[in-house]
Length: 181
Image (cartoon, rainbow, N blue to C red; front, side, top):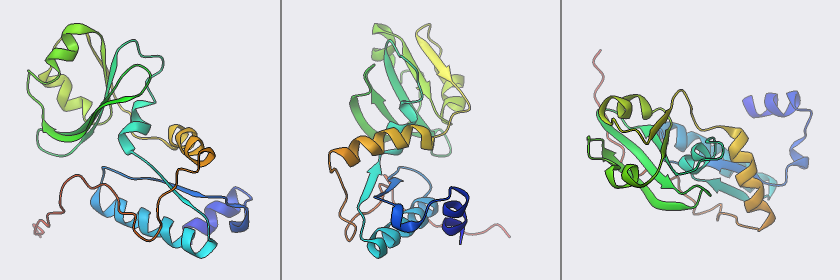
């Protein structure tokens, strides 16, 4: 229903779609599950390819012209964040990890050049890390704008996922928490 409404608003028919692009994670377990299921269903039904973009890579691309490393981070609750590190040309230099932020986190990077922290994990990081080379870009979430450009590059190079076997990147296993009600 929402997909039909979106296509109608954009004045696009399903037959005009050449591929479906999704954010592959990390992120909300339920959000990833629902989004990937919908995307896979559309790809299968329309016989079009599936493209996935790492969530943190799309987030990192919001930093304009960095002259140092970019740490894209999403809040993972408590003192933990999901983060990945990219160089100034957005090449991944450290894969995605779940980590607890301490005052020593990213110390080596900060000593050598500017470091741009971006994402909703910045709020907690800013309270713990204090360094002249730390640049905190707040109030940013992954955006379709950056994801579109990255997806188009994958589309041009036929870098597609296997619709039948693709799974989102959860990073951590799902843990059910009992309701407090």
